[in-house]
Length: 451
Image 1: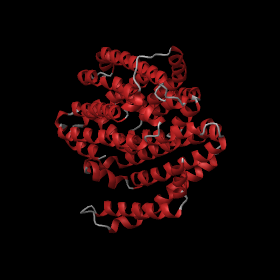
Image 2: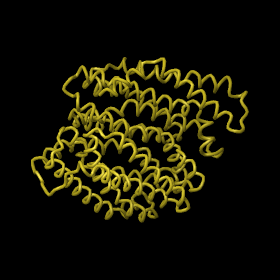
Image 3: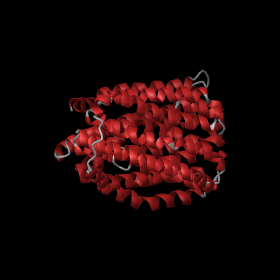
Image 4: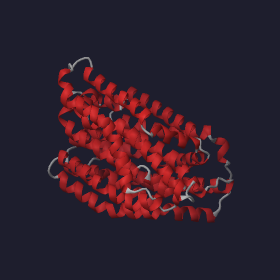
């Protein structure tokens, strides 16, 4: 968030619009380069030399193929979006595909060994160095944004390789039967991820054809800010939940309790982060991006609401289906949802950006019971009523004091020296402290630590 808050004041909105399109292309091709096999090792529960090396060579081959393919297609893709000036940046960013494919295999081995703490340190260190790069080379514009992403992924690969080299067991052993099984497992996961990425970025794809790059850049900046907490938390949730779900996949009662514990903890954390963004959006936007963006506070508020609903409902689905080997179910869900999702975005975007984000929030809320029925209840027996109760309780704990401040107290607080921002922070942290001690979140966290 700090990086985005600084760069938005230095880099023109056109560059953010170009980066939004470039990021869409990269994420789609990254799903292809991972081939859906990155989590097969955890699902399989085996890390013998032959399996590890077979998966590594599969990842290497798939990564090289799609890196080369995107490099060759870059000019044509840039022409498709009528933004030829991103061709150079798109070509150099293709290296991310191979880097990500290799890093995902190394990190899967570490996850299988429950090395979460070291993975978290690697993640934080890589992001810190990419942050320094982005701040130092901000004048490069689009190239700065692309360079920081490349550096982050490259450092993640290098640090992972150094830290977990003893687990890698490299050799030239290759087992065709393991490769076939991994690809059979991965084909639906890869398909689900690809379609899910299209669903996640279809708004950018549609708006790229209807808005100027400057307006698209403004939307992308607001979208990035709203999505940042979700993007930061989701990989952590996945890395912690995936091996835990895989460990107890044979016991539905244990999986039921485990899922409820994870769901309650993530709902509590996300409520703490997102409630101020939803309720106090004007103050947050002005603080981070300046008064020039304050007119978009309602857009940001509904974008934050959309991401809050989306991440609380879907962040546990990925590790759940991967650990249970029901990736086909996830693939079919994303396939079914692609058309209605696109229709909602296409129709609502014709009115205004505000109507778009309101429609997205309502649509995501309507999917809540369907997601529960199709995934959560099917796999864990956790009901829709249980999920709603946990989520509503967590949100209201933080929302009530912030709503009181926003509509009854805020006008009496001077709008200078960050007084209002400090009040929001104090209210949020006091609520967090009281709620953590008074609710069952601490007990749930202690149970997970025992695992």
